[in-house]
Length: 244
Image 1 (cartoon, one colour):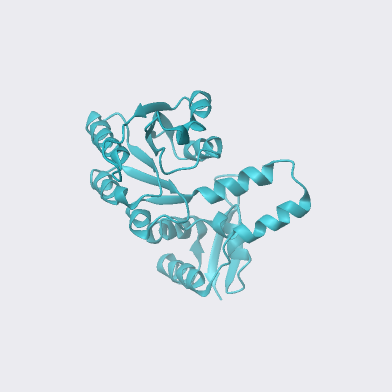
Image 2: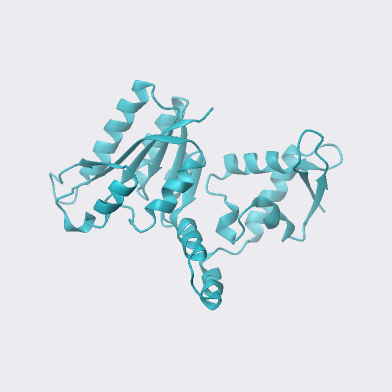
């Protein structure tokens, strides 16, 4: 059964260029039944959003900036989120912002049993990231959009600089997670490893390191051993991993 999601976008804080890719990403996790974007639509800075809203069926919510230097959009989003929570119409939220002001909101929604997905730029403060169940960087979606376009091979190769290099810290995290869910022989089902990694570090995503899936990322690291096993219940093989 599809999970119904409320998508709340901070229009003052998020670039409009990759909204199509963003909505496609959100659809992987549920059905976005409520889609709202907040901002002062009298501000010319938000003009780029207007055409995209119609194309993606996103409802604009007008929020005037009552005081210079204060972000009224944050308050409007938070109030609406709580109204939606108590309406019992959704079982998850997607908060699209790079603003740490939504940290408490994400925490409160999770306390109420909601699944919370965050989407924002790499500059997003860590407290907001860890307050979500999953956090996705917009830069990942940007890279995917550019890779699927008809740009030259040389240009695609240059995009590799946009991804992070896997470091000893991430390798240690993966190794510890494998140990946490491994059987007596040290083998761990990759699906369980991926789920626990997400809980430990909500912004862990193989696409951050240039890999579409976790399996090729694990295979690229020499410290891990990978075993593909037959699946008697399905046509896809089961992937198990072990620390060498």
